Length: 466
Image (cartoon, rainbow, N blue to C red; front, side, top):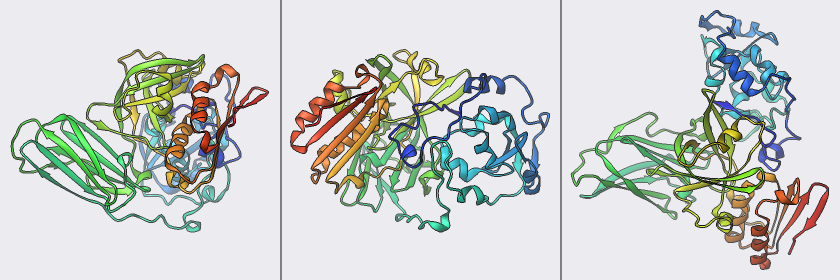
């Protein structure tokens, strides 16, 4: 599964750009695109230099391979010869060399841990580490930028992440239903905190608590119906999941544990979970922008909170390609499209199509009824930061506007202390202003909140501030 770098990610207003002075992205030579790399990996050429052999690599051996034309990097215990990939890396050769001959796991996680490097570098695999490496600190202590992300400070310079109390769960049944109760011991739990997937007898419920993830993963002992309900008691942090039995019979047990059942770990250590979602509609918003609507599987509960995103995954030329996108709030979709489908079962994406790109043209070619894989939500934005604000100033450009929609809607409806909200929106031309009429109506409807907008189009600047 490959990351698809593009000029649109990170978005101009994303935390990744805000954390740095700009993206560390270099122009690639002709014939060094992502598609060219995919073709090379499928050419049968020996990219490891090992003639098909896999070896056990010692720490001493790894350190020897620290040059541009002989560069080995260890990621999570596996060693890859990344020399053939040097000219294809959008962050440049210099960035890869920062982990040359060393364990690059921490550096990789700081930049894009969601990328499936096993697929991306599978033809570059040299072997497995003989001993577990301790990540070198030299590249962690440098305050340099890699692909738009500023590396985290060393753990010794930062306060330890406080772990919430470990959750627990129980279950009980009636003749017709089974109720699973999760006791989070947290008071800031909402419906967006719980992600549920039930398929082929496998029941998976992930609860997000601050920076931690609690997982219930069970093979159910009996069949249940597709329809289920979720209820959150916020003041006590309790989640109730009610499953409907297919047969009115007494269960002797809930089921048997599956992988990672009852694990309670930092979210960054939990791999992304994908489910296949069906495309149900596609509409033109601007000449190069589409509004996609996908339906979640019937046995899935997933809601994306403000400031968070998901990853879309497609198989292109036999390789899994993945890109991050922020779902669009139906608060503006309702002004554009009728009828609007309920957001607890459908997700909207506003996506710019790049004709010369690899991922978005393929996405645009999907027909109604086709499938695209959607990950569980990710993100570090804390909605609590908005609670006591008096003034909110939002900057966005093009489809980078999408993260702002939910934040804007949440602020207008849930932050009573706000006196003024201003959105400055940058676009190439006036025709490219996404949902201009809807935003102006939103400003008019919230005149008492002093919500205003300013448009920057090309070299011209106009104001719709109220």
